[in-house]
Image (tube, rainbow, N blue to C red):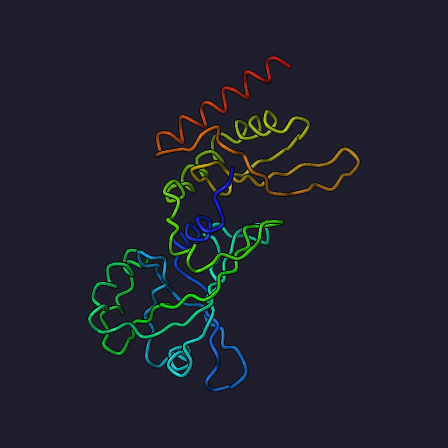
Amino acid sequence: PKLDFATSVRTLVQYNHGFAVMSTNSKANPGYPGGSVVGFAPDENGRPVFIFSGMSTHTQDLLADPRCSVTIAAKEFKGAADGRVNLMGKVKLVPSEEREALKDIYLAKHPGAFWVNFGDFNWFRMDEIEDIRFVGGFARAGNVTPEEYAAASPDEISAFGMHVANHMNDDHMDSTIAMISSQIPGLDVSEAVITSVDSLGMYVKVTRTPRASDQPQQFKLRLPFPRKAEDRKDVKNIIVEMTRSAAAASKEE
């Protein structure tokens, strides 16, 4: 089992490191897109919130034409096998009566953003999301409707999933390799790096050298949990169960 596309997108946006590539319609160079790396934070509905200097080119672009796209990569993004999403829509100035409430949302993602109190900085939000394109890795891509995105909630386990992944990668990679061997008989891997953990399972980047070649191959696979994990303790219990099951299966061979 995997998270559905809408939940995957909502989760990626929620737990991203807080930076994205914004492409605006350039005011200075009509007909050309203007690209900028910008900070953002999602609000409770998953809408990206921004605070920009009045002098920045993307501020001027948005004031002239609010249509833009925002490309957000997963926090663990290292290449084409990792997730990314593109949100297309209209980014507009936030009404003055709503701006104060956005400070806490933005500071939760960017604790050092002292400029949230500067008078010459402007609050923007993508209020109208019109199209969502998602790539979750090789052979996993598609569109999510704005309605599906708005109705989805971030996967709660993913909030701390990388802490679990890092612990497993640093101290228990042999257990991960054993779980792969148990679930996918015949697949012999020399390295297994967990890249993400969610409530339904783990994505693992594995390395193997085929018998007919001396060139190592790397690819990502899915290790599903036997049941949905409810909290951090449950994730630990499930992984322990999977590890013991793999060890028992190995002894029987």
